[in-house]
Image 1: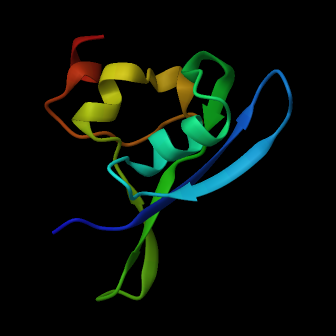
Image 2 (image 1 turned 90 degrees about the horizontal axis):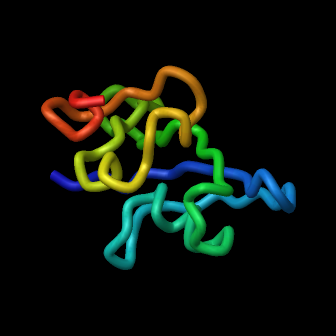
Length: 91
């Protein structure tokens, strides 16, 4: 089951802040990066969240293996969860 996720980020050079959801073929992380100009090297992301309908709580969505290809753990606020196995396991 694919879950709609939300995250936010800021452009470290301009200070611009954006929040975005997953959709249109991108994870929430990719949509934030695109909204902030498309340069992942200038963007710092928050951890992604999704609404768990069964528990009725917000929960963290791990960084998927596709996003691990173009993101590093330093691109996300400290201690992000991520899917294993994935590219971050090799770093």
